[in-house]
Image: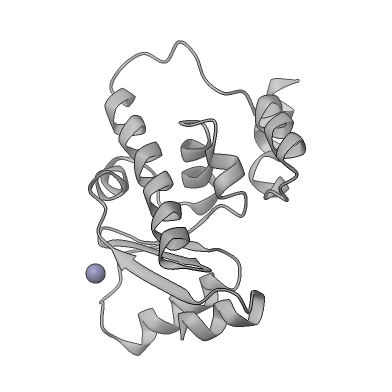
Length: 156
Ligand SMILES: [Zn+2]
């Protein structure tokens, strides 16, 4: 179901991969399961994040796996996102090739690792929303503007 949803958005998306990345899962326990907030927190963690997944990360709450219900919910998210988190379970990534799908998940996982390594420490620096816009403009990616607008308003 997820694969056919992705193919409608991008006929090149030949791969849909599912895994249980440790730090994404750890983050599920300490971060709100809100896709706008979850995406923003990851974008803040590595400079490449907004460039690698400008479309953000879809987030589903914990649901019973192996059911048609979770299949439909995931496919619905895949119409909008190439990455979808299953709360307290794992992640889905879609791409043109195994390398691309794996790389996408790995980028999110690395950002989640940095989040978890720093979550309990005072934050002295961050990547500002205006810097994320600079990155997106320079690399020519179409990012989720609605995921950034609240932060941009706070910054100025
Ligand atoms: Zn699983």
